[in-house]
Image (tube, rainbow, N blue to C red; front, side, top):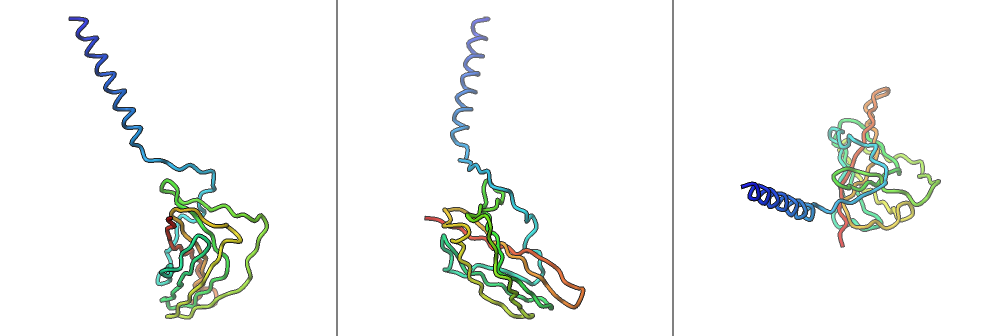
Length: 162
């Protein structure tokens, strides 16, 4: 009787071990990174101000976005932007290739009801991106009247695949 219980226990333990190995083999291939996590937990919360990717413009070195102002106030934005990559369900900053860099100080203005295409070539700053899911982030200011301005971050997602 005792030999039967030990044999049954061994069989259960072997089955659990085999099942664990099979389950580990089915686990999704997780990408690891030492990149910094995003600073932008809240994006696209500007009511009536949107940024979308223009169809057919995405490449490993750039794209064109369309910024649209359907708000009642004036919207301004500049040249600065950031790129982030989604890794294991979280957003991380794409590392820059250049230590000391700067963007041109310019303000683009969108009146209520206006939209504008803005083309970006990031090869000089980020290089050519590998396949994956990314987003571009831009800061916009929504000006309604003196002393009444809000700062928002717009994000537009895109995917690069081979």
